[in-house]
Every structure is written in structure tokens, then in C-alpha cells.
Length: 357
Image 1 (cartoon, one colour):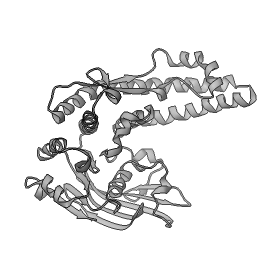
Image 2: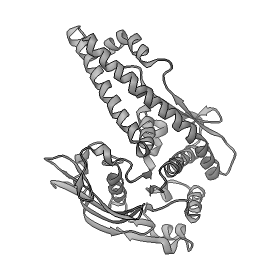
Image 3: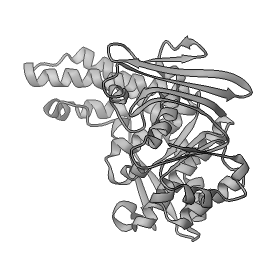
Image 4: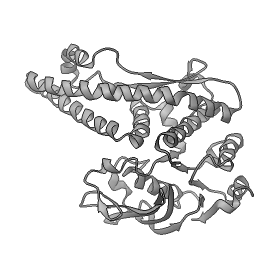
């Protein structure tokens, strides 16, 4: 898995840029010059969307009509091009070696990628939706059936919610259609729940190992998967009256959550800032490890501003993994050239390219 060249046009604040990459790639420059946006362009080519923005049109450069991204990859020894274009008046289009995908979801997992960024703290401080998204991004990259089940489940939830909202307006609900959507929700929901449980059984221990490696102590961290219990179809029927009142579906895997704990206490309220940062690093490195193990390739690793946001000890543990060859291709952003050169050192110098933006 190797990104050889990248061409960016009108993406966020970048007018035109072309890069030829090495194994380790560092983008150095002042804040606002577009370092993070280069990483986001790479992420976009992997996931068909920005890591930072939900609105695709916000990624089009100011006063321009389109953006275009082109990446030339070596995938299992085969040279391939991934292209993404979006026009203000058109639809987003992703092409694989010149051929457009019928559905964007077909591309997910083609280029496994992990991003570590300062705003990862939202996984701890944000709502349950952010933590479900984290799970789904990992599983979907290596399991297309899971992704399709998730898409179908969400569509069924939307349709049931429409019927529930209609009840609030007309004081009537189509019970036949309600049952049809409930049966689909229950069917896909069971499959999603089973896959998530399977994922956690494999994910927790590696995450613990990374936490202890980074922190150099024996503190034990844990992830608990919080989900519904029992038969989902029965639960949906039992909650119909309440759901009619509130106007949405209150039970199902779309309400699942993750409980992060340290020494059996919630990380959000009982861990120091340093412990939270270590936990997030361990979480993302375990994501990398899971994808590598299940997909047979090393994902692309994007490290945004880690030298500035993490202390020397944590960064040195990541660099130790780099030196050991644990990672594949890595992209790093930073504001200080001297700091990058010091952190990379002699051991990784020949494998590294530094781009001054």
C-alpha cells in the first residue's frame, strides 16, 4: 500500500499542488498554509469524504467551481489511480483507474487509512454518534457486507422515523408499513450488533497493549460495548407508543455506545489530560493494527500535528514503532522544521521526504 504521487486542485485553501512521496513524508510550514489539508486530501481519496467537514462543498476552494484530487498508488504491486472530483453544480465522482464507481460505498476499504489528529478528543468528550462512527469506519474498511447492512439499517430507521413524525401531524400511523420497516431494522440490526461484538473481542487487548507501551506503566484501560439486550423486533413493538410521542426510534444499534474506562473509572471524568491523550493514541494504533491484521496490508497513517500536541515521551514511542518498521507509509504535519529533523533522526532520514509549504 503506497501513495506515489498526489495532485490537488482547488481543495480547501490549496490552489494547485503536486507531490511525489517516500515512505515517511513530512509537511512543514506555518499555521494556515495547508498542511492539514494535504492530509485531508489523502483521507478524502480513501473515504470519499473529508475527515474534518461533513459538507463536501466546503472543501471547494473559495470562489472556485470545483475541486479535483488524483492519487497514483501502488496496490499489491499494481499501479492504480484514484480520482475524486466535485463540482458546485454536480455530484461527487470517484474513479478507480478511470472507471467511475456506481456507488461510493464500493470504494470504502480499497485504501485502508488511519488518521490521528488533535480533534480525536471528541471520541471522549463528544456524543455517542462519534464513537459509533469510529467503530463503523474500522469495520467497514475490511467488511463490505457490514457496510451494506449499515446503509440498509439506516435507511430503514429513516423510513420508520418518517412514519412516526407523520403520526405527530395526522394522529395516524400506517401500522403495516411500520411493521415492514421494523422487521428490516431488526434483521440488519442483529447482524450489525453481532459484528460489533466480534470486533470488540479482537480489539480490546491490542489497544491495552499499545496503551501500556506508550505510557510505560501497567494501568489497564478498557472498552465496553453498550447495546440493547433481547429481541430487537420485540423491543421496537414495545416502544411504539413512546416513539410516536417523541417522533423517532429510541431503540436499536443506532443508539449503541462505547464506555472508555481507566482502572474501571470513566476516562472522560477520571483520567488526566495526559492519560486521555495516551488512550486516544492507543485507540488509533489499535485501529491500525486491526486493519493490518484483517486486510493483510499496512494502512496509510496520517499524523496531524502530533509533535506539537503530544509530549516528547509519547511521540518517541510512536517514532520507536516507525523505526521498527511497524508502520507502512506515513504522513506527518508540523510547524517547525528543526523539530521534525530532530524527531526523525538519522535512523529514518533516508526513508523521509520533507515538504516545506
